[in-house]
Image (tube, rainbow, N blue to C red; front, side, top):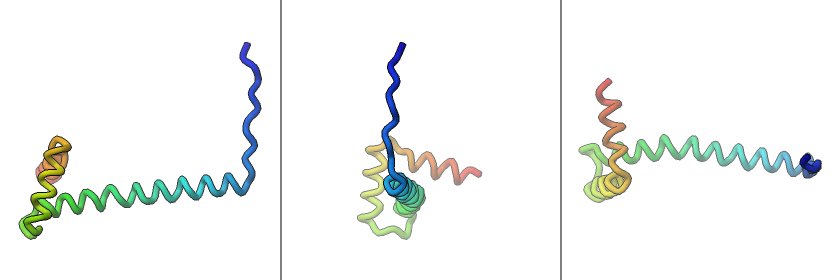
Length: 77
């Protein structure tokens, strides 16, 4: 039979700090993904500078072309 392992005491202050840290992390993840996609999608447009286009294509190539696939999927609708 497993032994009882008491839970670690977490003070209300520490719990609030942990919640705030988790909330900030989720906020930045939720903000970074759409902004990253927008930057990469703009990198494929005709208005993007040549350096941004070449960087975007190189990054997309190294990841296996997910951005080209996603743009073509969204454009087909």
